[in-house]
Image 1 (cartoon, rainbow, N blue to C red):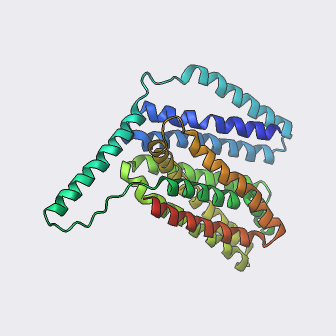
Image 2 (cartoon, rainbow, N blue to C red):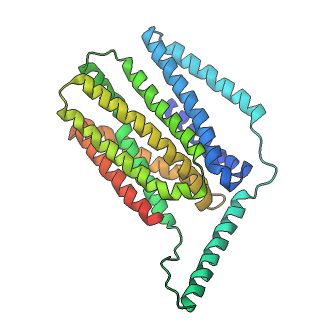
Length: 311
């Protein structure tokens, strides 16, 4: 029950945080701003994993770990009272919607004028498919949750087969988080409005390919090679997820109407909740981890096709 309450409070802060960033910065700076924010929070996540790694090595009691978490949460609460402020004016997202409508109308007039002049036009006039966007978001979240919910158990088993300490699991996820930090850094440097739409489907397809690569562990007999394979894939997974999240946050603030920013988190939550049940069920009750990787990869590629329709 406490864990469910913590999850509720964690998700509750996401929509106002996204709107706050969108209103504090202009549209051309959204990717860079979201990348900076997510990079900072991912760095905090990475430090937390390192602390968990150290506490497990030195045999700290779980009570001490929970007390440390409570103190850090209290410090975050106190700092937010002084450092988080509302924007003076709330109009950036409305301006973006007006700009999108104006650009669509201008493209329509341009294409019509070329056709009336008898000029061949290769460009098609089409709006973004918001339904496809939402469907792809749910599918991506579903595949991610199916893959990562049982992942700590899988990594523990791989480490145990190589006769490594269980603490190595923390180290592997530290590297996964480090890959995400690199992804946020790159997303901030390469940020522009067109990058997200053109690269989202490629990023999703790449995640699907990485999921299928994990199937190779069943055919590799050397345990150390398996540890290396899993670690490499998780680093690349974290890197790809960072790029995806930055682009999706920016697009969601552009596409989702004002007052409904929480829809982004609802869609992620639906996919995540379903995947949290399906992933362990597949791993423990049916076809094992190989089935988890294949099913997650197939859903990632389905999400890839959905985002192709959206863009």
